[in-house]
Image (tube, rainbow over the protein chains, first blue to last red):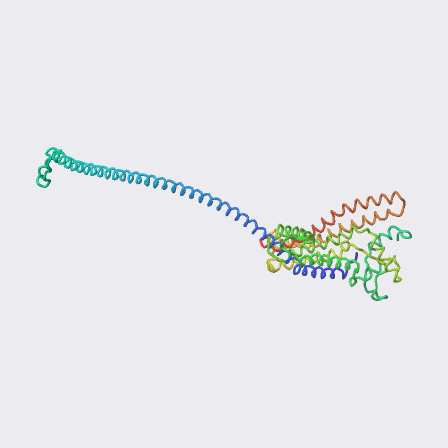
Length: 156
Length: 288
């Protein structure tokens, strides 16, 4: 229970221990604690950011999908329109072609008819001459009576 | 045990005497053989037991913490690091809660006080006769009389230890008071409150007492608690060796007191730390 040199020794030991603790114990551990706190904060911030980015990505994907759908609809509409146009055009062309063919056919028929008529007329003339020859029992000079025969034939 | 041929008062006396190394006029540099010789050595003597246990425990604390600090990682901590971090975090919370100024020394100081005082107090839980008896037997091998070999294992029951720490803290309080407030500011704080400059003597007495009571209360609180706790352990130990009923009763009492004492030793270490922080915080306050 006596106060003696122990007191001063203890003070010195105390000072040395505190100095050691202050220099070699506290700072490294505190640094590690702070570092971990920073790390965790960064991790949480990154997670938050990731979530936000995911949300943004989702929105973007939705927008893209919407745009794509719109575009597809537009393309379909355009295709429909173009189809209609092509159909109309084809119809018009076909109609024109049909008209042309029909006209050509009419013309040809007309021509054929005329030719047949002409031929018939000539045959008739020949027959008429032959008949006349038979009737007259003499040969008719074809060239001499050609004019007469022609007018005859025309009357047929 | 040693009580057989000793009276109870001898036994207690034996337990309350330090292993004192000092200078005696007629014998030279020796260990005191009894309390009278220890007292006769005066101021220039050392309590070797208190100092060895105190410094040993302090070194133990620093080695333990230094080992963790050496391999400390900001990643996933190991078990030891977890434990140390828990203590450091606890101390750091207290410092941040009570100490408003900026001083890098206060937190390590608080940690040292808390851990060291706790370890020194913890020695109180070692059975009260074990180490002194073993040490006595050990010294007996070298021809010493075990009855005159003293060994106190709880450094905080030695006022030298508690006063040593409290006075060191007091010096820090004085140093920072003068450093932060200047000599004039510190003297002014001592003399101009609470009654203004016309009540100067009264102010000086009041503030002086308040200032001096800091180291006194700091050290006496710790010393008183630990000394009383140790004394109760010694008294309980006296119950052994009489008869079976007293021995069993003593065992139960010792267990109960030891469990209760776990609370006290932690609390006293905590109080010493918190008061140190608060005193240093007051030393850093400029607006008084």
